[in-house]
Length: 373
Image (cartoon, rainbow, N blue to C red; front, top):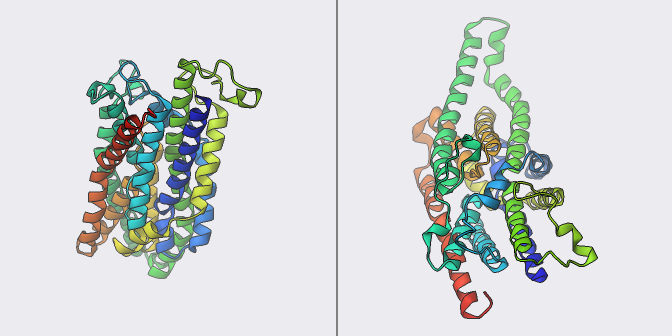
């Protein structure tokens, strides 16, 4: 049983690494597209800020660990978690190969749901659909409040906030233009590009931090869930000396520090390896970006991610930055948006949860047929 637990942790860290390079594009596509940073410089910035952001709270990890699967209905075994992770990993690799910026968050959630359904023999009550506490939004659990609502609201918010921030920046430039010398000089394209070229360094760092604060926590939640399940099964009762770190320091509301540190480092390493296929789609194919556009998109997306992480919502980094870029493109000129590219991205969004869930479901059924689960 200890071997299976360690295998879950290994699969979780593989998912975290893939999440890092799969979602690198979300952090740096705009700053690369606007030529403010080279790809290598942007990756270093994103990896550094991912690492810092990963230490910024554990609310999302707690949602994954205890807010989606009803452990009173289905027993969360190591086999269930391995199949769940395998489903998310497989879908991430498929979409990375195709250059589609799909959501690693939703791939993981889909894998969890599919594996839980298979383990419960299609009992849909195995999933926590909705649990609204009187204690407020931060205590909400379930797919409705933590997944479905953010899945719809965050792309809309990303689009609208991208439009709004760009509109405010254009209004500021117009005001400077009317102010007369010497302020009017600041509204010239050369000055605007120079200023926002520097400002985009801050917004790209903010985006990398926000990505780390939300995405790194999802794997933390999986590892914590595996350890809590192993503790309930008695696997941790007689651990060898070298494995004593697996004993949880607190209850199911706490994420051990070693989990946070390990996931943060692995995600940063994955981010540093890059994800150029998706960068090309987000940064170049959807709409042509200038530094002011990149600043607006990154600021909008990062703000949504940091807010969602505070409330423990595993929001998709991909959705927020993609729709923020769409919003910026719409704000500039709706006719410049490349609808065929956007359609491919939207289809990847729609398919992610059922596809990753279907893969995880099939893998667990196969494991059962082979006598492994």
